[in-house]
Length: 133
Image 1 (cartoon, rainbow, N blue to C red):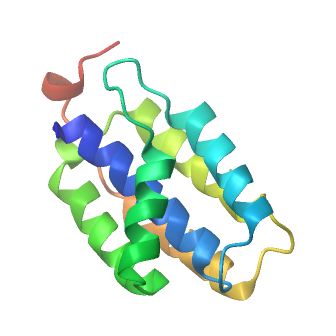
Image 2 (cartoon, one colour):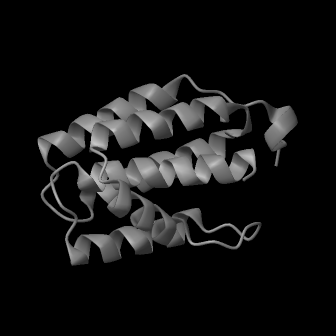
């Protein structure tokens, strides 16, 4: 995968971690998650469905939300030179929508959201990589 694809995949994993933070993901929550990720992270440059791939992998691995979050945030940091301000704002928006998708927002979900906003705050991409568009 390219660095941009890695960033999108990682944010999908973090969204999964937030959705999973309050326990098992219900069918309705899974559908909302899929719709949010599809709408916000759709990218014409690659032909794969992020949310379906993430659910398949995470359902098999059975990792806890913290482990998923930590691994995904590591990938975001590794590929952060491609993190444009616009993409960063999109990622924050996705996370907020995922957390609010299936009320109520639990303390565990809120904690991951605050952690994400803190962790991504200082990451600044390099315009040489992501362009100035």
